[in-house]
Image (cartoon, rainbow, N blue to C red):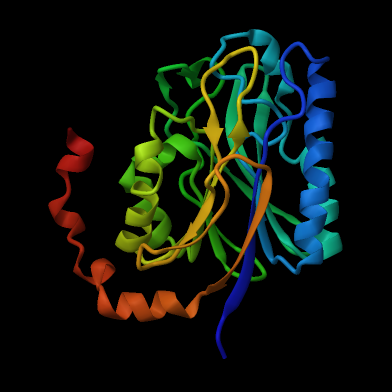
Length: 288
């Protein structure tokens, strides 16, 4: 019997930004805008749903305003607990990226994973933190320190990579070796910078590691930073590197696709990259 999983990605513009109210008001408005899309996914029978990078706030990293530290919250915490209710209601695994506060001064760009029964499974913390071209993330986030966990959810073995991580094949490989069948990459990326890489790197990861990927990018422009236009174009890619579904580049959207996990076995039986790799020959990777 085929292992078919229905998965969804939500790409969205924000309803409020800096100057449109308090941080709590901005977060609440953004969460409220997501709820109909989450409910739509549940009603369509989506089994695994992923939201975009730090989904509950603007992408505030083009500035360096310490006031945004107040947007961080514990995991589990209020936002994750709200999402657990939707996961349980719809029996839907959810990947929920938020700004995490471990303790004062220890903040992370993190994605929580919630199982289909609403149980919190764990989290992935973004490993590679950029500091370039308006993406001043080191001002806000510590580098992730939890490795590359894979979560055995009700429907599939799920891994998470976040935005800038996608430029580094090493972690993508570890997720495959750890057993990931679907890797989700929630992102915030703008036209004119890395758009030309958007449809290159993640299909390459999918091919090199023989798994599916769900790649999410937000939509629109965000004042007052004017970093550029977030161009959406969220997509699913299969283990052959084929983009099998893609969203619009300019509108809020729930992208839904059925994924045949049996393709992983089929592809890996042809391309034996895990069998033929030579880890003992790669010492220079960690020595340089």
